[in-house]
Amino acid sequence: MPHAVVDRDTYMLRTDDGQEFDMSAVWFTPESISFFTLVHGSEVANSEAFRRDICDQMCHNSYFIGIKPVPGSTSDDVQIHRLFHDYSVRIWGADLEFMRSYHFDFVDPLTSYPVNLPPDWKIFETEGTFSSFGFGGLATPLPPGMPPPRIGMEIKSMEAGHGLRPEQIIPGQEKYIQREGTRLLMISPSGEEASFQLPIRQSIYIEAGQALVCPGMSFPALLYAGPTHKVLHEVRSEVQ
Image (cartoon, rainbow, N blue to C red; front, top):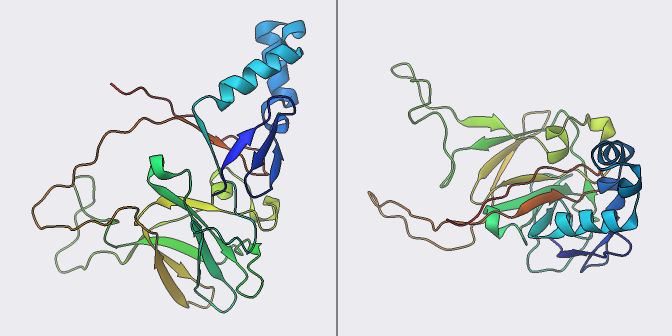
């Protein structure tokens, strides 16, 4: 994912691959200004000093997610793998290390330009090295003789997860985010299948009976910076 910084004077988020996003359209919507006016008064809410203070607060200890690489990016962080005649999967993960996650989307194999999947294409989590389902204390016990499920939860795009219908998603802007190592199964409307597994960042050897212990992590603010101008959420915690 491109690295991004915000210009305090213009509120423009600029990435190191040349993309620009107007963050004032995210932070200073009519609804947010009305809220700020209610809390702080009209004079403060409409002042430039207040806006810069909001900008500083939003950018402090923050990562911006949801920014796509430019088409044809040669970054070492970007991988493209062909799955179907019409679709290749593109995977990138820069700045998602603290989440142990990766973004992915789909691109035209011939042009490398991103495309949105039609709604009748489906993506499911499937059992892999780092993903499993149907087991554990919260799982429903399987009847005797019934094999475990082959596929699990259907995976939705970030945009669909925030309530956007397919026709509302800007063409080429649909994207997904999943934990590293997740194996996914993609099914076409005709039933054709292809699977892929997201990378892991550190090679490991798994020994039977040996627990895998991961160090604690501090989670900074997590802000969506995509062109649909929706803030995902903020996660803040302090290292104990």
